Length: 356
Image (cartoon, rainbow, N blue to C red):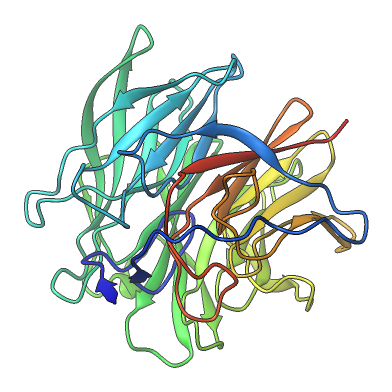
């Protein structure tokens, strides 16, 4: 039996909103081949965290985790905190959109002031141009309230900040377009109450577009900057990475397909690993995590077959971050046609690969 989810997208991941019900236990992932690392369990999340998504690393080694709960929206949505010693707690309950009655926290990052920004995905056929960028006001390390920064996107997804600007992907910028057109918006940090033009593709905050040609049909997803200030954007459906370069005034000089390689079927969440001088890419389609180096070389860190994740195996990874010598991976487990993961079931997990 299939279940149609009322929300069509997932956080630093994008997927068709068909999740297959059922709790039959899967066989554990097989042995790792070709020198791949075998992931382990970092944490098993509470039952009310059935669809984990994006992460934001904090200076003390803890990190925030957005949980939109697309598989089962009954509990509501949450932003969780995982401490440096891997204790899980509730951090913030995102407010529901007044028109839709739901919250959809996806990409998340920390702003220059310590406030927290997250993408609130609201896309469905009934509610186009309702997705938002939100800011959580912080006081003495405690979240206070969420303020609407931008309204009017279709599929607000990844969020990244560099300098005085915040960048957000809209993974379905032009619904129904063939090839699918998605895009990247840029806003000045500190500006709020921004309402995008309708359609959002005509808004001047749009700094770049991306086309997706594969049947998956979801485009601009994860974002990260390298040390030189170049912006990278994953194309979920095509498994490519775009690179945008800028002049001294912030004007976009180029927007090109930077990496296209059959080793990578999906470019979901991206994370700049400054220590390794590489991008960590979650490949949601293949149950894989890759390193992409600045010379465009791709090294697959971990990859496994269909699994429930109980042994720490990758279970539709949507984002990976580096904490010390650990690669921490969020397993969204929100299956759709054509990917390795075929079933949503417990446990709900974050995996870890230890580099040393």
